[in-house]
Length: 267
Image (cartoon, rainbow, N blue to C red):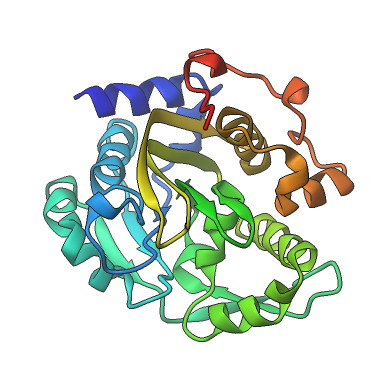
C-alpha cells in the first residue's frame, strides 16, 4: 500500500499525466530486466514496483498493458520467473512480451540505422521504469541508459564494443536511442538501489525513493544530484548539455514532491 501511494503521489505531481491514457492506448512498461536473478540482488527493477505502477495505471487505463525488455541474458519471460513477476501481474491483466522482432529507424547524429524492439516501437505509450544503479562505464544507469534495452540479441554487446569503446560516443548513441523510443513517462525505482560495481555485481543500497518525470534527462539530473555524482562524471549528462537539451542543470528543473535534501546520499 505504501508503494502504491508513493507511485501515485509521484504521478500526481506531473501535470495532466492521466490524459496520456485517453483512448485506451497500447501501453508498454519497460523495466530494467538485466538478467534472471532474484529481486534481492537489486539488479532489476523490483517486481513489486512494476506491479505497483501497473496497479496505479489500471485506475485510468483499461486497454492493453504490456511489460517487456531486452535483457542482457535471456528474455523478458525468463527474467520474470525468478522475480515472481507473472503471479504479480496476472490479476492486473498485464501481458509479458519478449523482444524478438525489430524495427529499423534512422539513427541520427552520424549513426546508421537503429534496429529497435518492435513491441517498444509499436506501443502507443511507453512507461520507462529504470532501476537506480551505479554503472562501471557510464557512472550511473538511470532513465536514459535504461532505454538501451530497446536493442535485442547480439546487437547489445556489439554496440557496447563499438559505440561503447568511447564513453562520449556511447552517450551520444544512448541519447539518440532515447529520442527515438520517445518514452512518455519515466518512473525510477530507488527504493533499494545498487552501489559499487554496478550494474550487475554491486551491492544493494536502500535509498527509499521513487522519482518520476516526463523528461528522462531531467530525471537523471535530479537523481545524480541526490546521489552526489557531478555532471563531469556522467557522459550522458555532459553530452545532453553539449546538445543544449533541457533539464541538464538543476536550476532548470521544476522540482515537486519531497525536498531533494531528504534523500541525499553522502557516501
